[in-house]
Length: 88
Length: 416
Image (tube, rainbow over all chains, first blue to last red; front, side, top):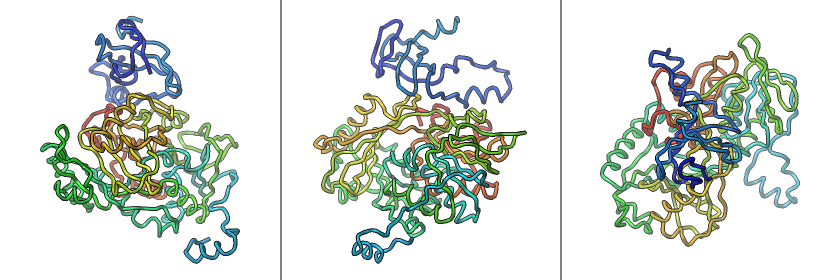
């Protein structure tokens, strides 16, 4: 599996640290109810097929990336900097 | 049909024409009292204990492919009860006790082999941690023994205890741990369940749930609607995909775990050994293959195959502790999909939908749990109360902060 880092180019999966679903970027407000925080912290869509998740280019530029990927085929469809995704 | 030595001799003399299938190939009835979704080890064990132990009837097991074709046929066959936490250890010890009587219970040769498991210790801190774990095991009625390097060398003379990088300082042994012929577990439970009237329905995929006013009425399947009073999901690896059809999001991610087996060798490894300085464990099957594995790949996946970095990591761990492994050729490697939960521990619980029950989140430890998982799930289905050893395996433990986190990693499933 290779990931196309927007800064460094396409690199081996070994260079990246995996965090989890990109829904982690949508952090609830501090005063949000318990159920909202429970949803955010513990529940996952866990799709079979297309997914968006967070990878950290630990052995490269140190960027956090949102990677679009297929969980059934391991195909990597694209990657963007978290900052670019946040601006969307 | 009861299997026995006499039966084997009789069949040998009469051309093996009297064996017959071990279970019926059932066609679905319009409705059942209990539908268990998933014909793996846990689902079949659940059906068996529900019929045999809890005297329930009118039970079906629905399997989308063939029984035993999922993780019960893809694991590394180890059984043990060397857990630390109160929520886990009584459950796994109950499971080990069920393993000990399984073959007599089922009249089926599952090749339960209590050859012992040894967790190697490489540092003082690790000795402290394993001492604590061993004491927790003993407090819960399991067996545990701290071994010196001399005791270890008596059984495993090939280990290099004076290795410069990873010296072996001792080990935590559970002599009652060991291995089981994994496929035979699925087949044995299937045969036992069938003998107690359970319908095992293969090639029957559940495509949806029929839920009315918050109560489950049955399941839509590739072979039509089947009504049920109680529906029990038991599809670890695919739990999120199934429960999504009931509108549920789970505290679970699916991850791929790889396993490996070498060509058949003469006996070199009498028990199960785990390397303490990396993630690697190994045993030798009765056919002679060295069966080994390590970490999950670490990213969400539904592909039943992994990638090369983890293969490299496992091989490095293996070479660090068993340099002789480098002389063996790899025969096969494969991957299975794990339900990785948020705290590394399983769930056996009711859902918010009346009549719909859930069993999953087994991470990569489901095989050893098979008998107790089936027993506890059957208990829950029959009585609507959790079994005494499974009271902690609830959905609400995450929201309530009562995680059962053996590794202390928090809600990061790929680290458990």
